[in-house]
Image (cartoon, rainbow, N blue to C red; front, side, top):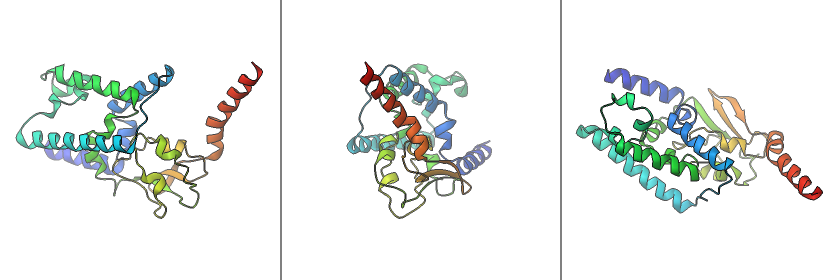
Length: 228
């Protein structure tokens, strides 16, 4: 059973990488709902700084040490994992939901004010991210097309600064990238950033799509305000 688990984990990590975090993980889905609820309520989120992302990295390392220590010591990380409150059946309904329920509340509240906050500290996501060098999904950048506007960094829920600072390498995949596509969607330059699978572009930045999604609504608002 252990070999089957490790084998399945490795295959999933290689084929999908942290695409699992971006589009499969139920914790990510709940955080996206919390983020959309904040937008619907027109509530201001937390403006993240580099120092704040550095603090989240410290929390990530603490969570990872706790995860590995409990695993090797015979403990149960499920006592702390917020996913238990979401899917207690995975733990056989034998673990108390009080602590994991508190953690789930913290995840939803933090996800409301900062998109995908828990993804920045998730130990399982970090372990999956270690396979980013061999994952079939990649994040690519055309450094010549990039204008260093910083829109990709501002949109990235993981605070990956190298997305816009990299000026030489085409492959900018990192262990933190969850392939949510926010950097691609918010890039205003044609083919500057793309998500690829087996070397083929499957999602590419487009100036036309960006203008339709961002500039057009702003123009409508301006026209509406002018005619009021």
